[in-house]
Length: 416
Ligand SMILES: *Cc1c(COP(=O)(O)O)cnc(C)c1O
Image (cartoon, rainbow, N blue to C red; front, side):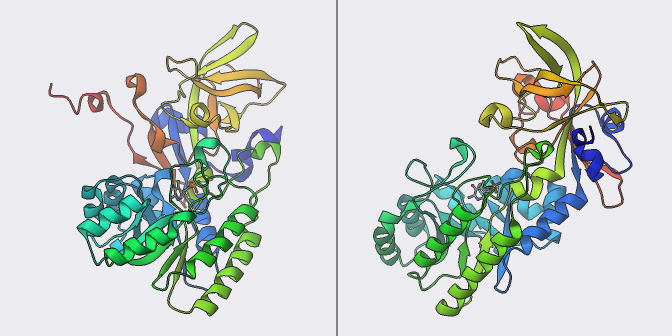
């Protein structure tokens, strides 16, 4: 039965517990553990050894200002995909040289937004290179390369290869070079991102190797960014193992070192982890509101709709669940139950046919690994309020780091 409480085993809540936290802050609620978050930052910051290296936190995974400040304290740099992300990163204290703007399909104003702040921009197509050339001839820029192969856990997160919208294809490198000459642009950075949630490092390492071969043909490079996608074990209750970061780090460090010694120059190497940093540092708490049997299926109705956590509906993602009652995990015989939310859509399913102990109205649900693409993808759909976010700090104290929406927030942008 102990397997059923990963949070208990790992001391995720410290002296606190889900029931008490929900009582204090309301349900549903995102809860983060600072120690776990820092640990993940450190793992990623020490991935490549022996060469200039930093990990760029991908803010889209979790953009809570307090967590961003912690990532910065841990020495991370950051990627931004939009001006909104740039502003929030600046608020968190990131300097222009620590921010890398890696957008796709943006207009002139967004490139200007970054260029005016001395933030390095990356172009996702030849068209975008031409746009930057036309507004900022003579400037330095980066490009996102599509290496022609992708990887990922779901079609929607494979971000390289012939069937995705991202990057400049390998067949367009000559054209890229002539555009750079035409607009007197200096290609100082290249980046790629082949997809999200890999648990074996082979594809990432192979892509990194090809990337370095390509890099050798650009003499002005100061930055080589291998991308993100580092997976985390979403099936931890079933014993899924972790990505072997030691092996990945060792092999990547060796490749990078060999490249740097042949190529010379002052090159900063980067990776772009998002999920790896924040996913396991956050859980989502919710409450069981109604139970029913329908057509042979046992439904557990909760307040965790897909407006709160979109991943299961959007990508068929699996999140491990724990059931708690009065401050302790519920034990006992398991049966198949389907956990659903309170949104008026039949796709509002958090977990289908899941083995769970006997659940009662008022029980607490703990959704594991919800710190990445959880709150950041939440919405006010059905005019529901987005939940609060709480941090359990290094001393084990709970602190509100984002207040829950209020009903007033639903009117804020109307003239009433
Ligand atoms: C989303 C994204 C990442 C982060 O992906 P994870 O799966 O969270 O590691 C990194 N780089 C780019 C360009 C992305 O779009």
